[in-house]
Length: 295
Image (cartoon, rainbow, N blue to C red; front, side, top):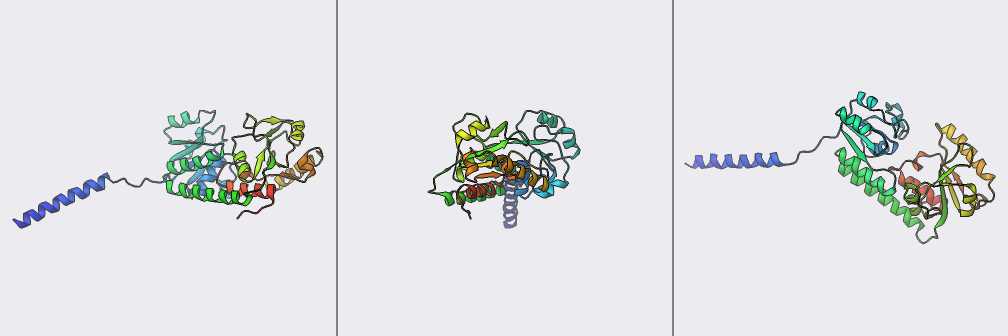
């Protein structure tokens, strides 16, 4: 009789255990083969420790150096669905954009994830979206926390200082200072500039990237100009373009920043890729604006 009760109790306990084990959420697998379609996505994947799972990147992905050996799947604006499909990915990350790659990949039965882009808050949103889709959300939160801590240190380094007038140029006609495209409000670099103690001279415009003339540059009287209007294809090409850019600005003596030696020609892609290197960019800007070296 006692033995029967023991067996019955054991059976009930076993059923309860099996039911709880079945209902318990199982850890989701990290995709083994990931394709990125933009530099910011690629840099984020590597920062999350997923670089060894990336099997394809965009044409313009150059950082970290390991991506040079990876197959290219087209540009951010025009990813090639057929090339992507040949890589047999488990997951493809894309930005919202004017292309039909999502529909094409969906037709091929390839899983995709659409992520944010553009603004400084969008950098953190993108990290969370990518880490969640790749089933490493905890790593995403740690990365966001680390980046916020780094930006806080930059803020602290310029606290109490008067913001300096800053103009950031992200495009222009090659080899000239015409057709200048600058940074307005809402963009990634606008947010970084504010943290680094800069006052964007185009903050009151309605366009995210307004086109301005040299006459406008003179009238805005920036203390500092950061020119990322020309990127090189190699270190040697970047250095050549930097020297050309500096020479172009030296002749513009009516510009306040030129007279004060405050023009910085930049050929570091971290400045144009809204991704995990934002702290590095903020530190550099703080040094140019206020001569400080944030920790």
